[in-house]
Length: 98
Image (tube, rainbow, N blue to C red; front, top):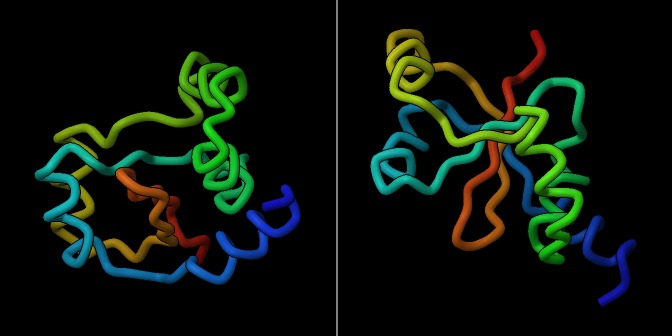
């Protein structure tokens, strides 16, 4: 699959979900949070393609990180709306800009 096909596929799988629908994936340790300055689809494509160099850079810069307990608690209180896409085994999320 070409990079463009991967991007198109990831875009088609992206959806807005409330945190309450994502909490069970957090409980399983499978949710990664993407900083606002990154493009959710581009990050999902890189993770899907196993682009270790790029993913490692985002992790180092803390632009991609596992969701922590405080974030989860805050989002649970207001049932935060998120953009989400699955790239097994991960669920990648980003805050919906309001």
